[in-house]
Image (tube, rainbow, N blue to C red; front, top):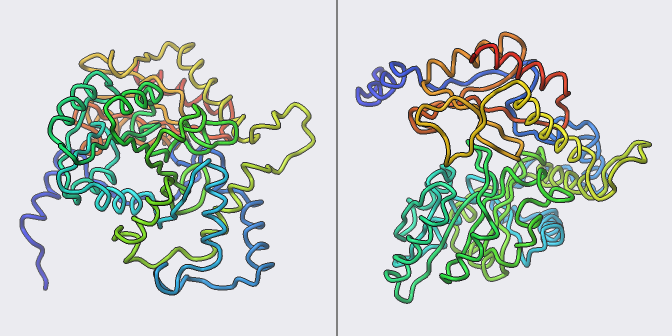
Length: 406
């Protein structure tokens, strides 16, 4: 067919008119303030070489898995990795999925049943929203990180569910804001209402905790969480994800999660890379540096230093910072964050794209986040910090930002 559906073209034209059309870019040589490679593991030559050696030493030369995990694809590296995940994350069971998107889609579409209620933070990730939309449960959003609003929803939900189940879902670090909920009080609130709590730890793994275990473990809350999602494509520099929870949850997902059942399993190389990345967190390659904290990966220490330095430079340069609940109606400034994600709100797609282009022209890869990824009027510049960013790079990119926005 030589033509294109008119209604689809109209939707594309609307994106063009609002200066919000997404396009695929190419890799560049700019200073990285855009990727999720927080610890530098994705670019680690050491992990790459160790993965190759591990596969060769174990006689594993398969390029693919050859099938789904329920057929021919459940090769020997799966139980090895899942056992290691249980030990590292203090979990009863772990089930590896092909990606964080697949994990969230498969979990939420299958676990919540008809008559159940899911309460989700209004800024929850799109993969969770998609999974919820495929379930038979009712769902309601609560205000971002607002426990008082959640409490009201929980009280109403308890009256509606009868003998069914109440679920609450949040992220430990929100990908488009960089902020975090009060997990300790959230756990207490869910316990009081007999609700099952689910936490997506995608942007906390490798960043929080003595060895990068995530925020849930850093706070000692792992036994209070019904399910945790951990992903391997961000700080761990690999590919895939896992759902952590009770053994019964794993059995249920193996039997009912369609994104797990009906997909080709990850190839051995992907699983070996994740295994060696976790090994690097536990037993990091060290140089002769007696000042290293032996409990923490040196890249993790450097990342924490860079996060604190970034925040101090923001303050020194007079760039505005505000908590999400105290943001002005027309915000220009950073959302307060202790994570590796720091977002400077610049209302309007045109303004955001102009400043991002100016930073890129100066050699710094800072990306604009536009509507509809974020609500209209809350467009932003997203700064992702890494262990390999130098203090000079951090200072310079923030000086440029201050020049462009003042």
